[in-house]
Image (cartoon, rainbow, N blue to C red):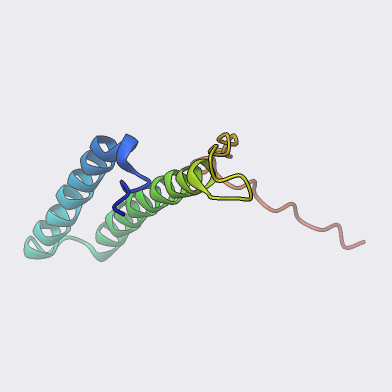
Length: 101
């Protein structure tokens, strides 16, 4: 039994994001070739890492939705309804400093 991957509905978006990451990495190679200042390279590495994390979160979100929709429970004849997913792309709130009085 072959099932489609959980990300099938977002395949084009994932491929576009990965192509963007590929371009960022090629840009990193050019920065090194051009002897660019290391802080600028590190900034671009951080951006590339964030872009990859974004792809990973999208894949995870799609997989979870797929699993919830197609999970076989006690009544395997009807798939479970999809649950709303949290906005995984939203940044985490910054921790609040503690008041040390």
